[in-house]
Length: 186
Image 1: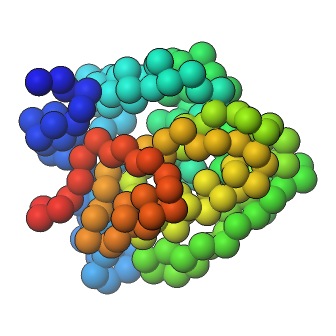
Image 2 (image 1 turned 90 degrees about the vertical axis):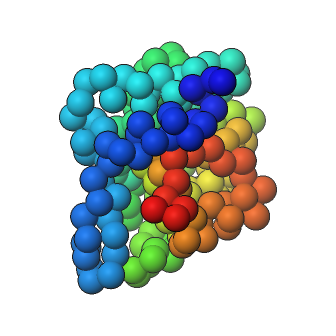
Image 3 (image 1 turned 30 degrees about the vertical axis):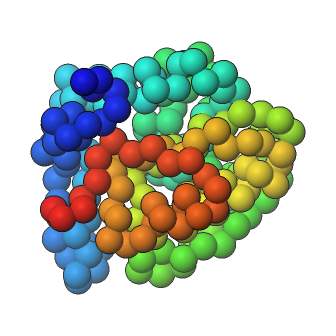
């Protein structure tokens, strides 16, 4: 049994270290806080290694991380894979020419942007965020990268919240999706 396939014992190890914050940022939301994963040196190393080992032979050109927690994991994974990193930022945060995409959240709407020179036609990109909720952020980020001519090799996240339907939406867009753990039935 390979630990890198995020089989139940491995998924449990990561999931057990994620903090659930009830009613944040609004009533009824169970916020899955990944900061405990980052604070513990062993857990952070295990988490990064899951992604590095999964993607080391996929012939990627760069990693794109979604604002803001996707930056943390995405930048470290890009470094470990000896790749460049592309930030997908919230609207108004990038200083150069950008392209933008609006999307729906589970509790509102938002817009993400990337620089127009973030990648080039044919680049093979890994798209990373901390979790998949409604799928809106991941799909919007993928659309931006595709507009610039990049190919999304796979989207990845630490957590899938399947009850919100996002992972299904991402896959329906033809985007391969990998998550370390999910909260189905938890």
